[in-house]
Length: 67
Image (tube, rainbow, N blue to C red):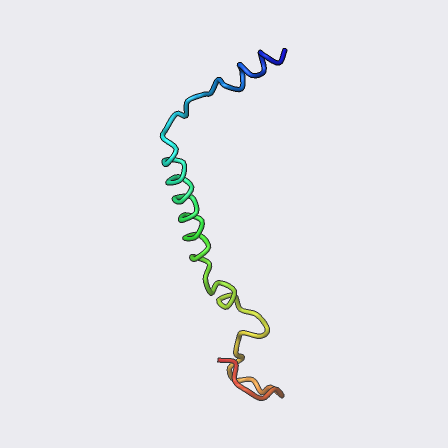
């Protein structure tokens, strides 16, 4: 039983591509994910909300400018 386990452990399977290709694919995937993340830069400030919009023509009790 032990001899069959050792024989199976020494048998290896060849990779379909060279090992450095896996690193290149990983870097490309991370680059695409970084581009997707970068495309949402400043997206939160573009959505109108209570604290990031200015009501023109209305009198408010608050002092200060929201620009």
